[in-house]
Amino acid sequence: MNSLVKFTATWGYLGRLPKAPGTWGSLGALPFVLLMMHLGPLTYLTTTFMFTLVALWVCIAYENQAPNHDAEEVVIDEVAGVFITMAWLPMTWQSFVFGFFLFRLLDILKPYPISWIDKKVQGGLGVLADDILAGVFSNIILQVIYNKTSWLGVQLVQ
Image 1 (cartoon, rainbow, N blue to C red):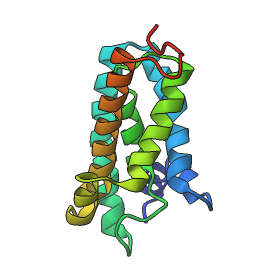
Image 2: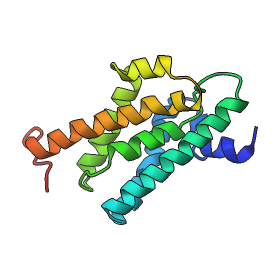
Image 3: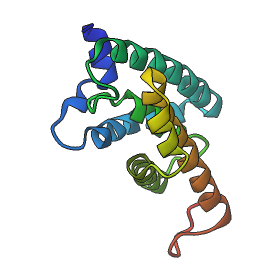
């Protein structure tokens, strides 16, 4: 397998850590989220879109060379999902904590239609699509929380 594809698909080999590779990949996305948030919303969204296209290419390339579908070590899909989760959110520790845990919850539990995509969409697109949808759902939930409520007496909107 191409070493650049493997390095990128595993997000710098975080996906090869022995326990919970998706969680490690998601955590590994957060420093990049912080950096991109400092560059402004338009740059954040543009970078997330371009990254997702690169992630799709990497997932397709990895799937074409791997013996099994959606290998656990591939975590670039989780990174894209975290980038989507954090779009348009305030740059606060609460955003990072709630965004991380909500994305992981939806990615692990895979409620419908995430579960349908996970089962029905094959190849590199299938590897990535369920995480994109988990990121979209996580973002929508967090937008509602941030814009309409406060959480346990802590005002989440600055």
